[in-house]
Length: 207
Image (cartoon, helix red, strand yellow):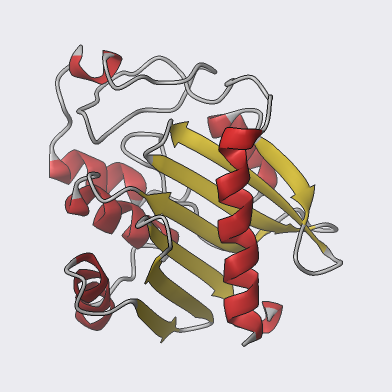
């Protein structure tokens, strides 16, 4: 129940992005992107238009870069629990939303990477500034392979067939929610009230 409440909190946080007046200072100019991919390095928002201006990366390139210890920014980066706040902000810049977390010892931030399409959210431990919970939210028109690659990055590139099947069932509307455990991590995939695909992963001792 606590896990669901925390997921509801961060899902709510992601919905606040469109309601705040913070300027977009997130992403860098695209280096190799496709309508469903982007690269984060310079602090400016991507538009649906400019993603057509360069050649798309191959899936192999995306897999290789997402599975590095620190994502390179190619594709939609998946940050796994344990990574530092410094790594996140170095790549993504100033967040759109920043607030106290669901738990007293946590701080939450959220980014809208592609307006109205892709959002990322994080809960950090206030003392260590390490990720305790990582989230991604996608609209249904985002390519499912992009979601899968980001999801795998969020899991430290340890996704298995069982978890892939859970994602597939939510994407195909065969299930509204799928929960899982992988090592010291727990997670949830759900389709929210706005029809967005929400993925949340947290360290077991957080909740």
